[in-house]
Amino acid sequence: MNDNLHQLRCFGCGERISGAEARPDFRCAQCGDLFEVEYPGWSQRRGPDRPNPGALKWLWRERRCSSEMLDQSGVWRFRELLPILDSFGNVVTLREGNTPLYLLTRSAKALGIDQLFAKHQGMNPSGSFKDTGMTAAISVAKERGFEWVACASTGNTSAAVSAYAARAGMRSLVLIPEGKIAWGKLSQAMDYGAVTCQLKTDFDGCVRVLTEIVREAPIYLLNSVNPYRLEGQKTPAFEIAEAFDWIVPDHLIVPGGNLANSSALGKGFRELHELGLVARQPRISVIQAEGANPLVRSIARNRGEALEPVEAHTRATAIRIGNPASWRKAARVIKDTGGWCLDVTETEIAIAKAELGAEGLGCEPASAVTLAGLKKLRAQGKVASGETVVLVLTGHTLKDADYTIDFHRGTLLNEQELAGHEAEIEGLRRDAVAVDATPAAVLAAMKERAG
Ligand code: F0G
Image (cartoon, rainbow, N blue to C red):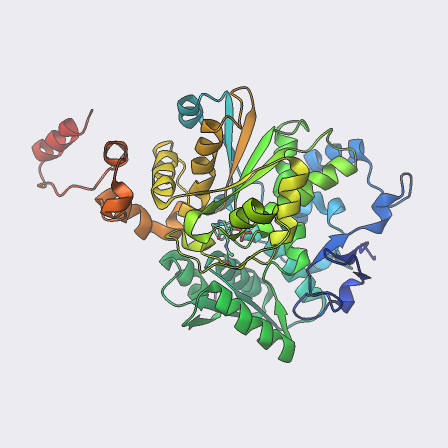
């Protein structure tokens, strides 16, 4: 059976090629820009390849009760909207997706918003949102007969690449910036058997080296320049729409690093809208760390027409990226949906992360930029109290336990960063205490901290 209905369209010059014609670096041979997957059959109003909205909604719901491997994946459950494989028999899955959507009651109250949710993509098999994209792209790699796959990463992509490669029986190569990724992520790449190279450079330097490698060796590139990654990463948009009974929320807030996730979610909602599954698209806003904010600068300076790379610095190592690959796509999503792009400080990130933790929803520092960004948007009057807002939490809290421990021990932020926030931070900090091994001492410690 041939399920494959896709072609690739250059985001820059519009050039169309077949999937098999893509270059190893996934850049357009004409203009150097990135490709996007498109499905020509969908543009014919009544063509046989155009999905039927009512039937799809019913089918996708039915699949939630199925024990079939493909149906149990929150990505492949929606396979009619990502027909990228010749055969779905090539799918490599770890049962990714189907992540929880939590109501954030305390943060909502504090912000004066009625409906605030967190879509926790950190609840994926390797602990980050990357899994939804990885199942898609690695399945393509398998179908095309690759033995080796590779990525440059700030940590989560490398964890996902190595996990899925191991499942598929492939070898993986990961390039990471030495000393700049969280331990949890490094441990995953080792455990899943990747060839893990720590390079004396930053993420952007790792990307440069890997781009040269894939041009010379038969290695399949799994960075998000690979357009199939975005096909998997668009499916949380379907899950969110389904969770709201196909009446999409008003506003989605996403962290921005290499800017693929915001691009993918934007594509997901756009396709739902174009196919008539939802009546409108949510506003999509992208939040960056202040020290790694090239898109914020680009939109402020030239409305996102050009991007000047920056040297990135932030403790949210996942988004420590100065030259994001998918910036044009993300800028388009923000513009088309009426969203905003702003940055938040290290202090704001740390506070927001602790607040999410206090609601029982830990996350990575990079994910916490969403709540920090929402606070700013609310203060600027850009989010009304009656709006339904969804924060996309991208990584599991255990990925970067050092950050959390440093925060609660009071060693994370420097004096300058603390200034003016001491009381707020004191109220959030919960250090572990050394206590005598007697019931009386433990009860006394409890009493002391009961307030
Ligand atoms: N949040 C987390 C936890 C991430 O790991 C990343 C990116 C992002 C947000 C930003 O997403 O790049 O699509 O804008 N991590 C990368 C990596 C790049 O290599 O793991 P983006």
